[in-house]
Image (cartoon, rainbow, N blue to C red; front, side, top):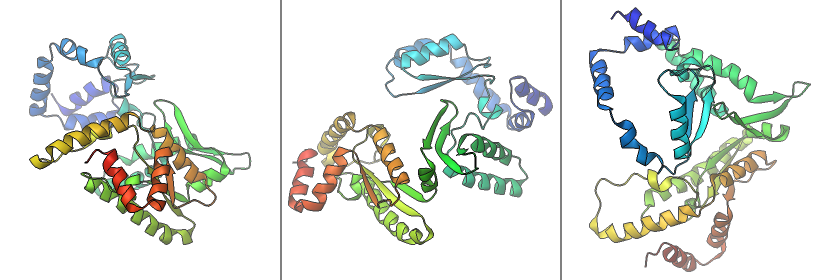
Length: 327
């Protein structure tokens, strides 16, 4: 099939013409054979996957585009409900919704857009590509959703991020915090920036590094009106344990303690603070007239900071070993 005909196939399904030509130019015989083999093998997907859907515990988001010809809305909604996922409906968009309206369907962080846009424009200048057009759309989108001005044209509020799929805006609540957000750099560290973590030495080392890096950077930038703060949470209820990359080669001498520590970590994360606790402290730092270098997040983190500062080292060491069941 000629390139132009392949491109028109994508156009019929809602892909913009320029992007359709790009997609069509990347399809070859090998890709076609692989895709067909995959689809032809998927004859019992519903039967094979259905039992596992109801066992999904991780919060999810099911994106349902209104004009998608390949998805039956009732089945999609049923699967989303069974897995506990939130359903986000995209009106007027089809199967290729990220290409149809990139600005509306992307979660945009204002602190990242500028760098991304410059990178895209540089790439396009070198290679003669049009990808920076997406960034231009984002700029207009950001003006509409991120910034609120008063009647005199002064900055009234500034969005931390805007999520168009869930139609959620997280803003700094007033003029003071809106301006402060542009002058404060918050790094999320951990209590492991001032405490040891046996058998997770590399991870603890990265958090210690954030402490030193942030304090040094704070001295460099404060003469320019910019402050740097470190947010120090303790255990936070996330998928941390599931996302840890294990070593390729494990020593048998550590087998028992690995099992004990893994179980203890799951128990701690199950009763840990919600991520919102950390987010609130980030906003506190951003809105502070005189931001502190370090902010603990949550009751456990506050107690650990006090213990580290005032308790004898021997007492702290004994508490760590007892808490992690190392002895």
